[in-house]
Length: 180
Image 1 (tube, rainbow, N blue to C red):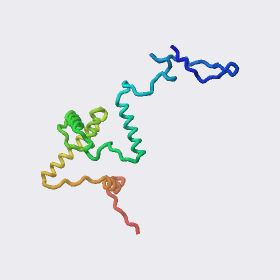
Image 2: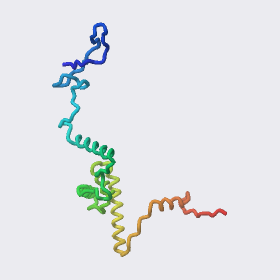
Image 3: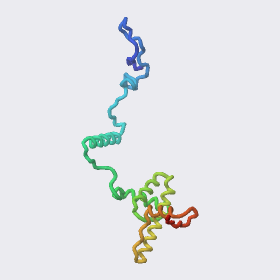
Image 4: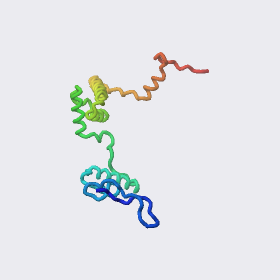
């Protein structure tokens, strides 16, 4: 069955009737019109899935809060509070798979990286490198603890960059000359 909706075409002023053709698309199954002329419903259907409805409601809530100037709750929690037990379990399982037994630290960056690598194989090399670095840091902390001294802080990025700038092209330190 064809749609048959009136399309925007010329009218005959003499007879007062339409001259143009009607819509020739096939009507949707169980309907009288095609998808362009009202055959498809625009409202929610359970086949869409309730996740879509939840996302749309959340987006509407964000807009409402912005309009009212209200600070809404939600989003990622601060610090390491957003790391769940399930994420730690996933990270520990991948660490065992990569040859490290147990997580060396509960560092949020490391846990996040391992969880990402569990889903995406292309991240495994990054995760393995991060695991080895975390193991080294843990071993270093244990050694300093055995010595009975506090572990020295890591150098800041600014000081590392300053040291690089102080070196000359041949890799040696360049003495600052005073201009007089």
